[in-house]
Image (cartoon, rainbow, N blue to C red; front, side, top):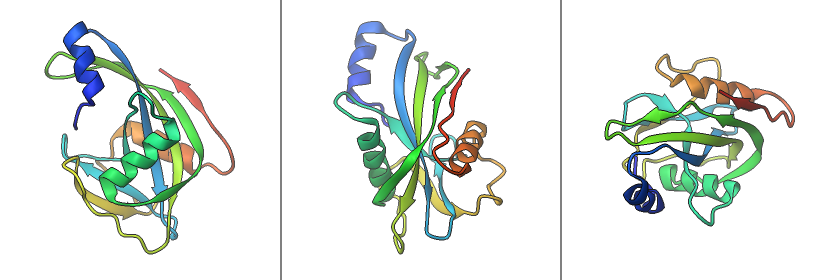
Length: 159
């Protein structure tokens, strides 16, 4: 996954020290109620769409940009579906990060077909909510479950 330029600039100053980073994700549904998953190029597993916010981004603008960059889809945001503080991670190069992620429930316009538009995806596929792949990254099952909840339910989960 490409590292935003501002993160690279900060890493030159702070090295591998722990950084708190804002992230955005989306559970994108089509007109049949299926959800879009991305087989990630970094680990070969299925996940939802998302990325890191950059300076000047709003959360909604960031997720709309990420979805279009990664799939070519134009979507509308239905609602916020969750806010999550993820455990910290240490990458193979020693960089440490903890993400606070804002997740949106989004709707794709009828008739759109997602296409791989960058090097972050190996595959993009629509799945029925009750037929998710076994190798879906575990934390995304939580995001999907929260996005499937009716109404304006907005959980905040920490830890």
